Length: 211
Image (cartoon, rainbow, N blue to C red):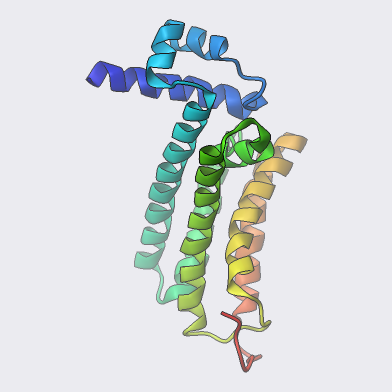
């Protein structure tokens, strides 16, 4: 069983590297089989088709991202005082983590699948949707805590605000890759940090918040 789990993980690692480099459509099962040093039957033992592989990669990505954000914002909560400082410090830690990737972040399997969603069945598309909504739920909850303690300088809806965190990260990865400039993603995250700081800066109170 342990060997089977190791083989499955190796297949996923090889597949993810190739998919992030050139997309799902351009990544063949033959290429994954060769890179994993297994037979075609070995691949199909673990994954009946590319839909099953995509679903597994998305599920793993969700788990990894949740662990990452739990760690970053957990450390931020220990360092900060209150939800606003937690958010600001967490974004700072995220930017610093990205700075420590000199060759740039490898990319996001969820975004890659979204760009080629016509290739996949309903279950894969729903898994991708679950990933994005999970990020929205996480960051919206953090912004709700901030709103409970701070006035906003602009009356923005919290769902788009939460989505903006993911949009900045994913957009930064896209621009960084297009221009071959790895620092761009961290720069975008720092701009997001500045926006949040300004949005909740004291001095201008808004009577009602859209929640």
